[in-house]
Image (cartoon, rainbow, N blue to C red; front, side, top):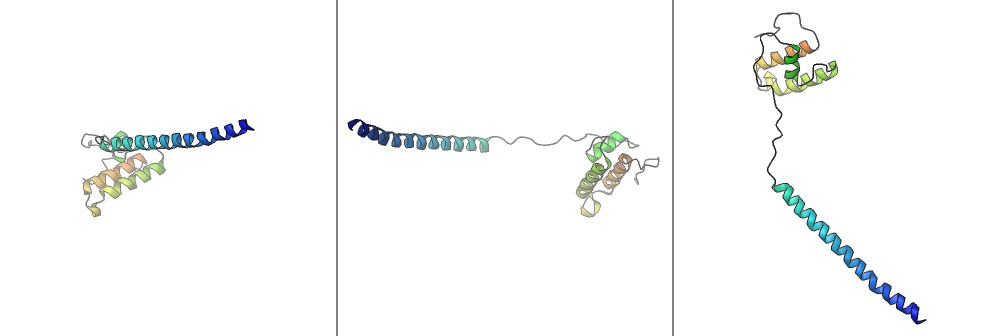
Length: 125
């Protein structure tokens, strides 16, 4: 009978020890995550700037130039070209403070990518 009493005393002593270890582990994990968050916030901002085509417009628009203007690949399907055209036009529309020249070039690029060009430069400018 003496032995069963000793075992229950041991289990009563182990339970608080395990609980203490769990609390210490949670505190250590919290401390680590707070330090990691502070280090993340303190890092210098990274440049997430996209590289754009650094050049003027060519006298006669090419398919490559049209793809660069719209921000798509030359082999992009028509639906994606229309989405890209809308996105670029919303940002550069003359009614919203954009340039008439850029708007005409964006429209010309869409026509070129959809193969609707009828020769000539196609631009009003």
